[in-house]
Length: 330
Image (cartoon, helix red, strand yellow):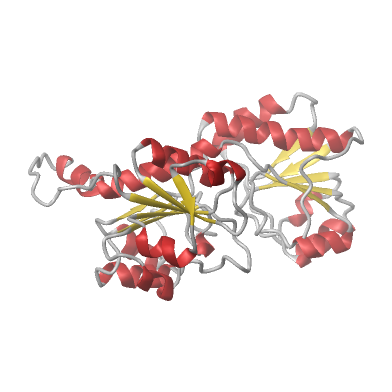
């Protein structure tokens, strides 16, 4: 089966080749899927996309005309795909619902620790052979209140790790996880209660109409001035301008961000020589109490192997006429 793989990155190559045990004819494309690049999928029965691809109704219409039948995204989230349009056109969409929750959960804690222990300014000092400790007094997670917003597989892993650090764990989700609801070391509460009590707040929600700008200026007003916020979910969960303002006014102690609401066209590429740079992102990067990573929480060997394994399971099942276990719909 001929398959176009969009937004292909060098770090994926070995994992894709190993997972393609069925010997599909792969067209590896570094370009994102757009209305201009969609013709690269001509003659393909399926395409594989990344979270940075924007699959609009227009693009779906072109894929339909070229008789592409299946879209597989190398992600759990599907907010980059117009699922309603795909469903109306009869195009199948499959995802990777879980590839390594602990990869993202551990990165969440890494960002939190970097902020709490002031590692960013510490690294900057030692790189200049400066070993002065003034201004580097940190905070421990132990006995702090750790709020987890979103208790799917990733949020559950974050909660378990936070508990291992000795934190009191608060949870928020419209649907409670049976395991977490039954343990004695964590408790579900309202969004307002969590924001008001938590010292560390982790965002592990999917992005949809109900969660867009989950953290807004109003949300920040409910938070402690000493709280830190960590987002390893989706950029759109946060009103970044409101967070930036809170940081500059000392209404928020720190922000760890692996995702950014305007990251498309910036993340996954070397933009160091770009003449024009996102001014909000540049300002955040310059702050000692902000830690920015480039949407890399998922980037572990175990996660990539699991991800590609599921991608090609979807492709193989489709090719062989079997039921697809990871279909998603509107």
